[in-house]
Every structure is written in structure tokens, then in C-alpha cells.
Image 1 (spheres, rainbow, N blue to C red):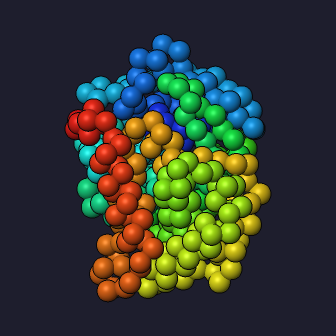
Image 2: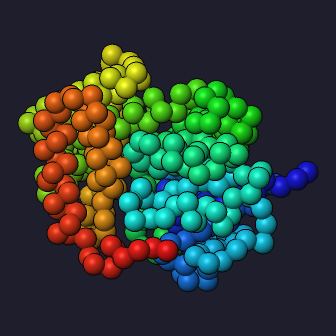
Length: 319
């Protein structure tokens, strides 16, 4: 039986966790591209402390800028932070071949469109991770809760064979993996959660998801921000279920207290995904001439915090 060869681009929390999951499947070879932590992972591999199963694995190949691969990949899963200065297309051009399916497992909206234009002959999938994962140190990731994925084809707008194949891989590894015939709609749905919890966790001085829900004032603000994002989604033609907001509140209330990825980036003086999570929907609002006062305010505040908090080394070009 031919092996499925998978490259994860990004050795942060999400990339490391899902790479560790697939690495234990028979018939799957997992390689990893690192923007950082290259030497640690090359020498020691990756340790994952998980509520599902603790794992320690060494990728088939550990790659970084300027390094070619010894093999062609069936899937490339992009798990990088969605930051403006990351030259994703440059990374992908090194590893994409005619048979490669590109999967964007990232936050925000709009990334699939850019990659599909750059690689018109390759199928592009979008993926959403619903999970609580933190990178605690180079090569060390902690998985706290959840873990399910939602994937769908951006190129074909249906449940394609590539989507079915990737779903089967994750399901075989014990990860719940749903499929979506409209991944853009699914991206907007996740954004309804991401915008309030990521932004308010930073702006309130380091609140966990639990703390944001326990305070009646921040709970009300969470719901109002969700309503703005949901209205934008529907303006774009991506209707959401009427109970989406309450469902998210209930789901988050059951979650273990969690520091969002944006908060962890802020605390560690790393650049936050402000443009991907808040800037992109704000552009949509401007295009439709919609008033989104909460979104506009938190974007302005976080953009300023991003500039002040990020170290100069994080702003240097990455390729």
C-alpha cells in the first residue's frame, strides 16, 4: 500500500498537535516545516501533553527555509499564524507539486482565495480547528480540551475525494473531523467566536474564557460583538443558524478555563493575528457600508497594542 505523505507547515501548537496525531497512523509519513524551533525539533522531536494521549514523535523530515524535500507530498497542511509578513506562497512553492492538495488550517477569512490564485492547478482546502492547545516551549505542546476539525474544499465547493481522504485519516487517528460543502461559511461561523474571545481576553488584561463569561458586562459585550460578526457573515451571503451565539456561549461555558492564542501571543510579546481575525471582517463591513462599532473599536485598540507590544525581531521579514 502506498504511503500518504503529509507536510505540516508550522511547528506551533496547532501544527505540532495534529502532526503528532497523524504520525502514529500506519501508512502515513509526517514531515514538518519550522519557522522557529528548528534545531530543537530536529534533535529532540516534539512532545505533546494531551487529554487524549501523550505523545513524543520525530517527524520524517524537519525542514526550514531554503531546504528542499526528499519526497513529494499528498497533503500540505498550513498551520502558521495568519500574519501579514509571512511569505506563505514562497514556502509553498518549494514543496507543492502537481499532486499536492493544500490545506489552510488557519484563522481568519480570505486566505484560500489568495492561495487558489497562486496555485490554480492544485485543490485548496480550508480547515478549522476547534480546540484548546498551547505551545509551552520549543517542541512542547499542551492539549487542554476539544480537538475536532472541520474541513472543506474551497476549489470545488463540494465534498471532494481529497476532503474525504483527509477526513478518514483524522477519524482513524481518533480526531472528530466534520466536512463542509461551504468552508467559507464555516470560517465565518468560527470567526463569530474568535473575534470576541481573542480580543477581549487581551483587552481585559488577561482574562480566560471562563472569566469573560462570569462577568455580566463582558458576557454582554461578547454577545454584542458576536452579533456584529454574524450580521457581516449574513451580508456576505453566509447565513448562520439563529441559535449560533447561544450555542457558542454554552459550549464555551463547558470548556476548561482557557487562555486564547491571541492572549498567549500578547503575553509572550509575539505579533497577534489582528489583521486576520479583526481587520479582514472590518474590510467586509466597509465594503457593505455597515456600522460595526464594537469591531471597529477593538480593532483600533488591538492594532495599537500590537505595535507597542511586539518586539522588533518579530517584525523582521521571514523569508
